[in-house]
Amino acid sequence: MNPQEDQCPLKDGRVLLSPAFKADAPAQYARLRALGPIHPAEFHLGLKGWVVVGHDLAREALTHPALLKDDRPAADALAAAGYVLHQPGVGLGAQMLEADPPEHTRLRRLAAGAMTPRRTAELAPRIQQIADDLIDAMPLAGEIDLVEAFNAPLPVAVIAELLGIPAQHREDFRHWSSHALQVASPEHRPALAGLHGLLRGLIADKRHSPADDLLSALVAVRDEDDGRLSEEELVGTALMLTVAGHETTVNLLGNATLALLRHPDQLRLLRDSPELLPGAVEEFLRFDTSVERSTNRFAAEDIELGGVRIPRGGIVAVALGSAGHEALEAGGEDPAVLDVTRPHARHLAFGHGIHYCLGAPLARLEATIALRTLLARVTELELAVPVDSLRWIPSGIMRGVVSLPVRYRIG
Image (cartoon, rainbow, N blue to C red; front, side, top):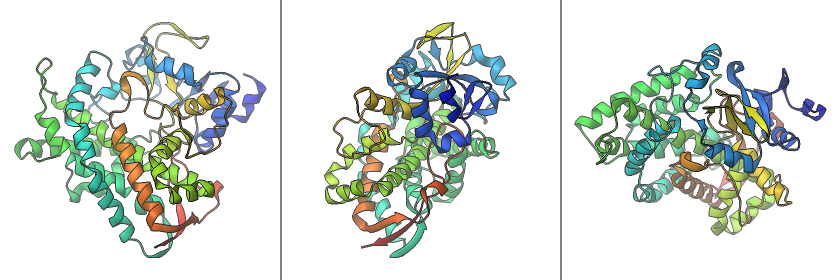
């Protein structure tokens, strides 16, 4: 590799996507983009593949007909790295995020039939109430961890109410959800097993006593041509909505708040002009997205991607945040500049192609309401610790701070 890449953590000539890399991800990806749009990389447990960092190549990879979610061509490499393949209660299960057409088409249609735009829009008053209640519960001034006090409990309450998860299960739900995608954490598999068990039990309850919630709608959903969701697909879809609908938004709020605290001029602008918030949310998604990279794709045959040969079974991940930065660089703009008035914040934070995030409207709605409420009601807000002391999620595809200590004043 080019000597410039010595600034990135390397192992055997591959970019090591380690905790050190993730803690400094925007700068690390900028170094990689300067050297090319795709690089050999080492993922969790020594799994080797390639990471795409350029915008145009990212769009190509996310829609490439030979880059699939079917991991059978890579089964030997995955098994050697210690991945448990297709064991019930261990992974995300049978759901659309890990499926290819035609199964993906069927599963997405069924999930979309339950998670409708109407159901999402109707949540706005309740999201507002949750945001206000969380701020009402804070002392009028002092120091708090904003992740624990506001950024995490808001999406937890929203997705729990949307799915129909009773209050007595929500503490476990929050804990398991926060660890489900941290693949290097010792709590990763226990968290997935806990979520599987919780959702199976709740689905059984909804089958006998349906309510006006998403789990009941998923249980009841039918499709004229394809039939109902199987039991495993039902659990997998519920689990995917749980994790994707919770942890992503926790980190979106954390990253957005941190960005504003580091750019007080932009914070003041949003306080003075809250009507800018919908567009500002797009800029936050571009500036420091909560999903750092896509889930893995597997080459169904030998292919060439960005001039690099990917053999059958090769593993490709897309650095979604990096792609959003490269899109600005290509137009001569500096992606490290936060501009909440940016008219076209091009990003791939919700993916691209058939796997584009089904919950994108809900994430945008939550972020807009939560940030508007926080900025309107918390009149003084500043970091309580140095920026370089913040701890970042150390593994997996998510990007976000573990905690966000702030000093604040309400009113």
